[in-house]
Length: 303
Image (cartoon, rainbow, N blue to C red):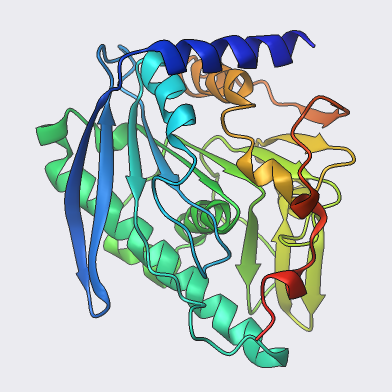
């Protein structure tokens, strides 16, 4: 109840605050068109210099970098964090969504999104200072497909993936906080070859759209938050997780609702460099519970 009241207070304060400055900048050119990022600058920047980079959800079929998210951005801006929200290519639009072809299409869509994430990161490394952004202090977050992309990006960095080769040697993010994310490896069971940055996972135990556990076929693994946390724990790498009982994919939109936990993780684990981790199972009847949260993939991928 206290967390719910804190979330409500933060949201009300954000709505009452003066709108923060938003600057839209082109960061990459693709065959499909120009990709843009929105930069939200707080009235007073937090001394930590943290910037939160967000990737929207929509199943790699749809979505928008501003859709129903600016309330959360105001909360984070009011805390003093810069926000960057990026476009990325939607690789499942027009793709084959049937049978085994869907696996190949999904793999390609994830790769495209990660490639765009890394392009946005490179842009901020080279140009971020113009906008008051230190690219060495980026915290990634995302919803659903966006959560998959940011978590996959960290997986690529930790495993020396080909997509990560565009980043400066030794570069990594300050943290990754996905809401209903997963990692896809089409050759091997999940494994992080090097220590990841601090990771905080949010996931609904009854999520049918992005798996909470894992889907494994031959050597391919599509591992959700439960599997990622299990693998990291087994390898001795730190990871924290909130597991929501009786909740499904609706957890993907819990950014504003979970702002206190999100901010606390940044302040204690990332800024404060605390080594503490946790594994929390949450039973919160007050948390948002829309009917679509229990939908299955065929409700989204039905062509």
